[in-house]
Length: 363
Image 1 (cartoon, rainbow, N blue to C red):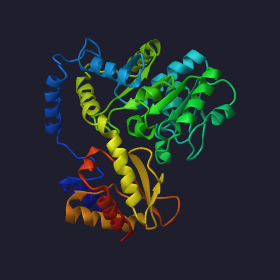
Image 2: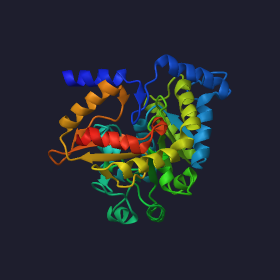
Image 3: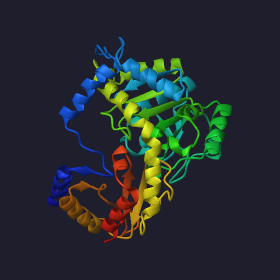
Image 4: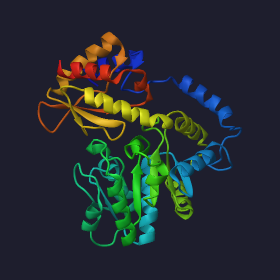
C-alpha cells in the first residue's frame, strides 16, 4: 500500500457523512440491529445447517415468494450459488457447455474456478458491451447445458435488455430446450427499469435465478437460488458438496431479511435519484446516459491520478465520502468511476452531489 493509499483509506474512514458510498457501521451496531431483528421476525432459535426452522427457512420462503418461484435456497456466496445451479442444469442436459456473456462474473472474476471445479466449457453468448438477445442464443450452435445472462450486465455499465428482448430470449431458450439462468446479483436494483413489472414477472421468464443480499441491499453476505423444487433440492446437495452448508447461518439470513424489509422497497427511489444525478452531471459522460439501475459509470477527460488527488483533498477537508476512487480507462488520459446509489444517497440532493462530483473530477 502506497502512502497515497494509506492517506485515502484514513480519510475515508474519518468521514462522518456518506453520499455515494455506503455508511460503515461498527460490528457492534450491526449486531445490535440483528438482535432487534430476532424480535421483529419472531426468531427464537438458531438454524441447524439451514434447516429446523428459523431465519434461513423464513428467508428462503420470502425470496421464493418475491420471485414467484416454487422454492429457494440460501448459499453463503454468489460464486457458489451460480456454480451449483449451472452444475445441476449441465448434469441434467448431459452437456457442460454454458453460453454466457464474455463479461459475465464466472468468466471475469472467478479465476477459472468454474472450469477447474466443474468442467464447464464457456461459450460466448455476447462479447463486450452487448446485452443478450434471442439472435445471440441462436448463433451458439450445438448442445448446451444452460444459457446464462447477467441482469444487469455489470462490467458493461449495468445495462439490461428491454422487456421485449427478454421475452424473445426466454421463448427461444424454451423452444430449444435450453435452461435459461439469470445472474441477478443486482436484480433488485434493475427491477425499476422494467416499469410496471414485478420481480416475479422477471423471474418468470427464466428457469432459475440467483440473487445477492449484499450488493445494493447492504446485508452481511449471502445469496439465494430460486427455481423449481427439484432444482432447488439438487442445488442444496451441491451446497453441501461445496462446503457451503454451515453449521449456523442465522446471522446472514437475519441480515438479509432486514435488507429485504428496509432497503428493497426503496430501489425505485434510488434509480430515480441516479437519473436526476446523471442528468445534472455536466461535463461528465454518463454510461448508460439514462441509468437503468442504481449503478452506472462516469467518465471524465482527466487522468485518474489528477482526480484522485482532488478527491482526497475533498475527503480530508469535508469529511464526506463523496464517491469511489477513479480508475484508468482504455483511453489514455481519461478516468472512470463506477457509481452505486444506495438509500444513503437519498438524504442528499442529487443535483448538488452531481455538481460536487463534476467539480472534483474536472477541477
